[in-house]
Amino acid sequence: MLTQKVKKQLENIVGKENVEDSQAAKLVYSYDATPQFQSLPDAIVSPRNTEEVSKIVKLCNDHKIPIVPRGSGTNLCAGTCPIEGGIVLLFKHMNNIIEIDEDNLTVTVQPGVITLDLIQEVEKKGLFYPPDPSSMKISTIGGNLNENSGGLRGLKYGVTRDYVLGLEVVLPNGHIIRTGGKLAKDVAGYDLTRLFIGSEGTLGIITEATLKLVPMPETKKTMLALYQDLEAAARSVSKIIANRIIPTTLEFLDQPTLEVVEDFTKIGLPTNVKAVLLIEQDGNKEQVDRDLDKIQKICLEESAISVQIAQTEEEANELRTARRSALSALARLKPTTILEDATVPRSEIAKMVKAIEEIANQYNVRICTFGHAGDGNLHPTCLTDVRDQEEMERVEKAFEAIFQKAIELGGTITGEHGVGAMKAPYLHLKLGESGILAMKQIKQAFDPNHIMNPGKVFAKSERKRVVVTS
Image (cartoon, rainbow, N blue to C red; front, side):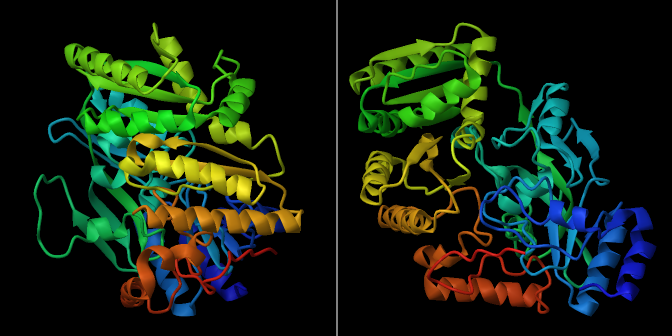
């Protein structure tokens, strides 16, 4: 609990209007997009600049008060659930695009900037920021940095970390540091920039980021391939990559997902097929046409029953929007929707798709599968009800089996969602005890008082998910 003295000190730093501790406000920020996790913070604090963040962090460090940095709360690993109380740090005031530097092809932003707003602003200048998480309409750059978010374009363009050149960070002792900058090359010491990206707010508070931009591609085209065989669709993914073709987007949706998404979007998606691949390529027109011709032949060789190219940008955008709405569409069906992101090498996609189907049958749970098949990142999504304890136990066992299969195939327990509190019990499957110890030592060095987003990444139990309620 915050003492009245500490609350007054916080109000002196940010203004009384930027410290909220009503029951209603605490309830709003007690959870994120992750099911089963909820815990009340002691207060919500909204700083207006880096100096205020520094003062807040120093005060909390002196009093050993937990701090949870939060964007829009769209993350899916309970990464912004304040499971040990303390303060939630909001960046609603720190939401400015500071500079678009066309000479150096960079943009400098504060953490509260909405991802899609950034993308649209740089596109006005003929530039391109590729990372595009499905939540980009509401997710913030700060959240993307903390989770190293991916997106549909990750296959060709990479993920958030591939576009971060420099950061301004407030350390757990309140000190402010800058890493990197507008540089194509920089090997001065440890690569602290990459250390903070994906650290889930456990090492420091990112207050500014300098991001790399690239020129807008000349053209892009979108294709839909239909299959009556799940494994044939998955084999097509591997074969496309093996033929040295790297599409911008190579997405997979199974039939249960298609049915739900079509009911939600009503754009005429086929629901009488077992799976579809949504494929997009960009670049110069000649290369795009050549690549799509090759991809079409590969899909047909692998038993696609139809391959169609979107005839207008409106049609292509409808397909992209439908894919991005998959989680929202599925979430309407049952009280609890658990979406995971087990990831395997691209060559193992067919085996993983088959394994997910078998595991769902084995544990008698409903799992819909979609995801970024081109980079091996699948999203098995279980539709369930947290009030059914017996079913939830089967769901837990099913996901543990999925994670173990992903590791067995050379993959990982999470490709883009992060570890947070939800995946923490499974981290040892990927890293082993020695790997976890090395990470804990880094955490200890930066944050000896363990105030930065405590309870995340490192599990208190290696056996099952920790479900915290208040």
